[in-house]
Image (cartoon, rainbow, N blue to C red; front, side, top):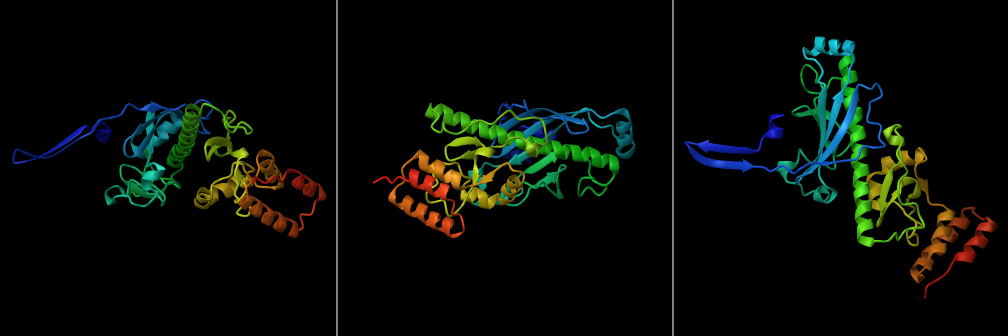
Amino acid sequence: GFTGNLREISVYFNNTLMVQLSKEMQKPRSMNLSGFDVFTPQKLVKLTSVDAINVQLRMISGNLDVGVDEKFSTEMERITKKKPPKETNIQMIFTEFGNSFEGNTSQIFKDLLPYPEQGKIYIGFPTHQTTGCCFNFAARVIPTVVRESIDLVEKTLAIYNEVLLRIAGTLCRIVYEDEMSQIKQIYNETSGVDNESDDENTSKPVNGLKVEQTKIIYFVKKWVYPISSVFIPNPRMAGFIKKVPVVSDMIYERCGTFFIKAFAMKLIKKLTFQEVIRELKSRRLCEDEIIELLEWWIFNRSNGNNNNLEKSEFMQYVMIRI
C-alpha cells in the first residue's frame, strides 16, 4: 500500500521547510517454511513466504496466494463489488520482550505495542476485535458495513476472513519456531559444544497437522529443547532441580493458560520422582540443596508415597558436595 512504499515526508509553510522525515528500509530476511502446513483446510489460501524486518518495532509479513473457485469468487464479487485478490499479505507487529516488558512504552507507541493487553485486528485502522496475543494483526480482511469489525456473520465473507485468521495463527507459529532456531544457532556458535548432551536438544520434523499439535520447541536456561523434554515447575523442587529443564516461574505465571492446555494435550509433563533421580545421578548437591531435597523427601513420604524401591533408589544416589 501507499504507506508501505512511503520513504520521505516534508512539511512546508510559506515555502519554508518545517518538518522532514525519512526512513530507510532494511532488506527483509526470509523464514523457513519447510515442514509447515501452509494451506488453510479448504485450500483457499496458501502462505507462500514469510519476511521479517527489524525496525525498533518488529514487523512480520506473510505473503499469500488466494485460490478460491469461480462460484466463491462470484459470490464475493456480488457482495463486495470486488473480486477476491489472487495475491495478498498479512502482517503482525510487536516488540521484543525487553523493549516493552517493564511497561515504559512511550504514549506515541502505546497503540502499536499492546503488551500486556491483547492486540487489535487492523483494517487500515483498529477494529474492536482482538488477536488473542500481544501483537497487532493487519490484513485485507473484509469489514462489516459500519467498518467497526471484520465480517464473521455473512457466510461467504466469514469463510474468507476466517481462513486469513487461521493463516495468521500459522504465521505466529513459524515466527516462534524461527526465534527458537536462531537462539539455538547462537548458543551452538558461541559454546562450540553440546553442554546438555544428555538430553534431546532439537525438535523433531514438524508434521503438517494442526498448528497447536505440532512439536513445540522451548528455550530453558542456555539451551533449546522440545517441549516434551521440559517440565512444569514444582516450587517444592526448585531448590535442588538445576539440571533437569524446567519452565521458568516467570514464564509459567505469565503464560499459565498455555501450559495448562499443553499439559492437557500431554505435550508437557510435571516433575516426578524420576526427575529427582535424574538430577541426583547428574551431580552432587551442595549443603543448601541437600536441605531442600530432604524437606521435599519428607513431604513426599508423609503424603503416602512410601514405595520401598523408590526409597532404596533415592538413598543410592544422594551425594553431598562438601
